[in-house]
Image (cartoon, rainbow, N blue to C red; front, top):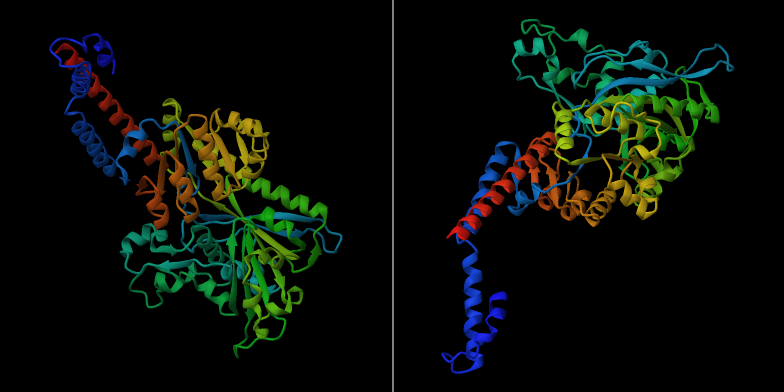
Length: 541
């Protein structure tokens, strides 16, 4: 256009038959100069750089689904990441069981939340629980030890699997490698706790001596205690977990040797986030089987125990139950009306009300190796990290400190100005304050809903950030599509999430995201260098 405008005085030269012919001629000259200014090899070189980059990323466990996203990676300013399985290893191990116990012989005895350490690691069924004998679930059948075993067994969709094919000499060194899981790791950790807490001592019956006639294979001992408790109940209905009530429950009917049950004998077993569960409890059961009213003082003591578990970077799962006499008779199995009552999930919270609190389990999910170093690299590269999790605030802060998102001097009870927020309280703030918070430092958003991710992405983009967002569920798909870079999990991710994402992590590891961003910046720098070279060369030409 500049060439054409500068040539206006020449439109009427004698070489042209008319002024319009001159205008057309110099328009062609301007277009020709514009085309000549673009190196003809530039598209080929850019495509080659991006293609070679995707190959290098594949070697680093990143599958690129959309080629232009490789270039965008080099400009990423914020990484919004899930916690479980990405920052942590997602190999859950129950390390703590908390029960309510009375330290007096009479009803006036003080009730305390007593913690019992759990030994063992990974998904091995071998271990024990301090201060609790295995026979207690039989000697006190109405106590909380027996109830906890039943709830963890029945309110569970995972499976412990023993691998008989692993070489015996390898198994003698690492028994845990003989056992794997199907289903959610959190639920599998509860099954392992049942094996350590139940009446059958699995470790005593297991030997790695293949010549022993008394040897039991891993497949036969993986769930012996779980089978022991499951055989006494018929699980006939499930109230699926959802993020609003943060719990899951099952309706079960006790059965005898004749496989029959009696009217009103069904029970509701519940597990879920302890804070949410505690709000729906009006009674509590002690370890000895005594049921007491859930007074404000006792609630406060349980809340302190929940906070203490969270401060140690442990995921806390609450356990509760409801006897058939307190249930709507339509939910009893023998009345055959429970399917009609369970058609509307919005009624589940009401069904899971007036519960009896049983206890809590503390579950450890250690940070992935190398994540802390990767977050330090992000800090040096000017990339901020926002951790998004459904865990409690104290647990989220403790994990954030472990991996380096927050400094060690941040206390879990600190105020919100330090960068840790529950999803609902963050979005309850004025929008201007939300944007100011998103402009500064690393953040943690806990008790988050899937829809919160998309809202965060839109807000970050509105202030000029280029966010990368991780996700694995169907509900994460909108956020993955909205983000500048959508990153799906290759192991735990659903097909819907992978289709919506720009790239897929083969190993679900946060460090792999950082490697991908590093590779993206190298590709971006190479393309810039090549363009500068071509422009300089054309200028000299």
